[in-house]
Image 1 (cartoon, protein in one colour):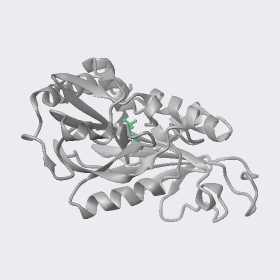
Image 2 (tube, helix red, strand yellow):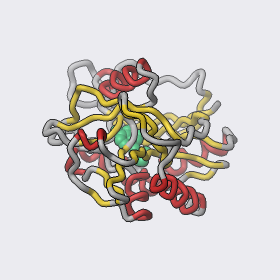
Image 3 (spheres, protein in one colour):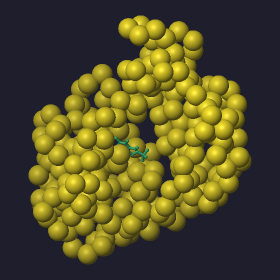
Image 4 (cartoon, protein in one colour):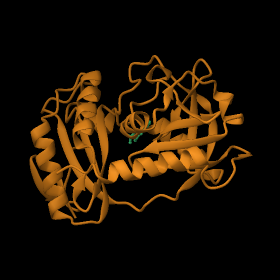
Length: 273
Ligand code: PLP
C-alpha cells in the first residue's frame, strides 16, 4: 500500500511523520474523507473547498489544491480498489513542544483504505454530551475527534453504529460522523448549520436533491419523527431503524427509501472525471 507524504508516494509501512507533529501532539490539523469508486473520486472539489475552510478556521496555511489532487490521483493509481476511502490529513506540521504551530510547514498525508457498502439501515443512540454550536472549532473538520471516538464507543456498546448529539440549547445537531434528517408529516427536515453540525457534503446534496428543509429541531423530535435517516460520505443515505429504545418501522420508511433512491441515482452519475 502506497501513501502520499512529503510530496511523493511512499510505502505505508515505512512512511514516517515526526512525533512532534502538531497534528499528533495537539490535534492541530484538518481532514477529509473522500469516497473513491473504481479509482474515481466523488465530490473532490467540495471536499477540497471544505478542507480549505477548515484550515482557514484553524489559521493553517491554505492547502494547495493542485497538490492534494495530484496526491489523491497518485494514491488511487498506486492502489487499485473497487470502493475505497481516501483520507486527506493536513496538519500544522512539526514544531517544538509548547510552540503554537509547527515550524517546518504543514504535513500533508493522503492514504487509502478499503470500505464496504454500509447496510441500508442502522441503529443509533443519543448521547448525554452536547455539541457546542458556538465554539472556535464549530463546523470545522479538525483532527480533534476524540469526543466523537468516545461517543461512538458508547454507541457500539449499545449495539448501535452511530451516536447522535444535541447542542447546548437542546436542539438536534448531528452524529459523530454523519448528519441527521427526520421525516415529519411526509416532509424531510435537517438541523441548520447554526445548530453546530458539520456542513456535510452528503447533507448538502441531499438537501438539494430532495428539497429537505433546514429547521431548528428539538432533540426530542427523535421520539416522534415518522422516519429518521443519516447522511455521510461513507453511509450515503442510510435509514435509522432504532434510536435508543425506540424502534422505527421497517428497514426504511417510504420517504427515506425515496431519498436513498434519489441519492443513489444522482450520485452514481456524478463521479469526478
Ligand atoms: N458530521 C461529522 C461530525 C462528520 O465527521 C461527517 C463526516 O465525516 C459528517 C457530518 C458527514 O459529512 P460528509 O457528508 O461530508 O461525509
